[in-house]
Amino acid sequence: MVIKHPGRVTLKFTPTDGSPPNEVEVFNFTNSGGVTLAMYNTDESITGFAHSCFQYALKKVRRRKTKFEKKNSFLFF
Image (cartoon, rainbow, N blue to C red; front, top):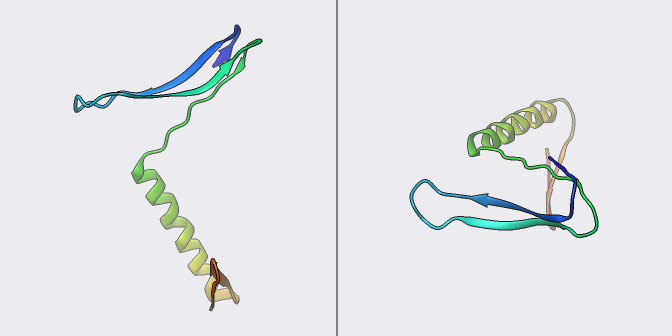
């Protein structure tokens, strides 16, 4: 969305179950306008993407030595 004047951009979620809405300020354009962008992703989409990335990584593991690391733990395959 193109913002042409000073003003406040907010993001508001209104639940369908009747619980109170949640609104956060994204940015306050004080001197002039600019551009703002909103994005969304569903749980199913996030899970599907994570699953495909993991499957791709598993295919790569079979072809070469791969290192998985988390904090101070290292696993080599």
